[in-house]
Amino acid sequence: MTTDTAAASAPFSRGKRRKNLTLLTASTAMDNAESSVVTVLFPLMREAMGLTSSALGTIVAVGKVVGMVSGIPWVFLARRYSRKVVLATCSGFWGIWVIAAGLSTSFTQFVILYAIAAAGFAGAGPIALEILGDIYGDNRRGGATGLLYGGVAIIAGVSAPLFGLLSHSSDGWRYGFVACGTICLVIGLLILMLLDDPAPVENETRPAPDAIGRKARSVHSGLRELLAIGTFRLILVQRLCSGQNVIMSFGVVFLVEERGFSTATASIVALPFAVGYLTGTVLGGRVNDRMHHLRPRSGRIVMLQASQLAFAAVAFVTTQVTWGGIAVYAVLFALLGLLQGQVPVVNRPLIMAVVRPELRALAFAVSVTTVEALAYAGYALLVGHLGDTIGLQKALLAVTVVLTAANGLASAALYRPYARDRTAIAEPRTSSLKP
Image (cartoon, rainbow, N blue to C red; front, side, top):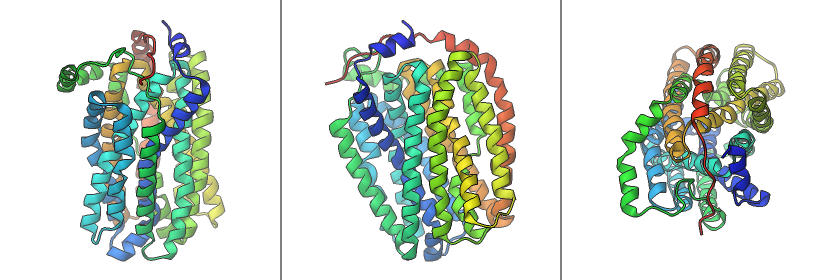
């Protein structure tokens, strides 16, 4: 059965798909919202605790490294228990640790509590993407993924200027974390009550607990199968060499330290970045689906390369040229968001196309919460360290311009293995809803 037929046979009306996509978007957005508080209000934390720019790199890196360790265990909990319950826990009820981080009394205590919070949110992405892959067929996943990540971006973009308003209070960063954690708790309840979770494709009846236990113990066999896929291996290398994500982690601090804007003014760029990202994911997802339809063997790779090379060019203009007002930076960050939004709508469907449905959650746990997190952590530490020694402008030149351009060129290695591996996956019929 083709993926189009499988998708058409799924028991979801358009309204149910939209409801589920909204809830999956909200769950995925919580990690980004927590990060927005840190990146926007870090200048206040720096003043309150006597920190340097490298401390921001440490915070970002710790959160990502912890996510690397915790992502896969959450995936196997979702196989042992209801995916909906696990998703509500890791992306919603885990928000209690975000509130605790906002009430911390020292930087060490904050980092520990922030790490615990990150350990929970790391499970949301892989589980949400697995559910998304069960709902949509291959020819529609680009658009669906675009809507998900576009929604995540717009939530982060709207929340960042709001968090920026809290900079007028010395305790504004605390208020931001408490508010973020409270929203997480509400989202956890909504997921628990409203999400319709489709049963995994191979599980028409739920396996017995001992069978699930055997699956959990067979993680090595699953990893071996994933690493035997040439496309997947190259995607891991490609994501490991990606330094694009640090642009928004350090963007506000860059504008404050290198360009002299206030925190409240600099935080304005988060909204146009989010609008650009939303546009890039939604329109990019549709263009990606169209390119895949016209050139199924290479269209997605073309999109990936084009977005990376264009991002490097715009990042150069943004970080290496001095502009007079915040309006120019707002336009440039909108363009960066537009190009950054192309990445997930290409990368996630690429993985879905070459990995068996029952291994997709593990694949995303490896690629997103492990490899991407490792890269994000490493580059955050690097940019923070270089920012203290040679300045953020030169640090961002090395990571977001030079490295991204090199990665875009090297992504050409994906053409041949992707054309081969995508033909090996034949998806069965999507099963019915769980009760």
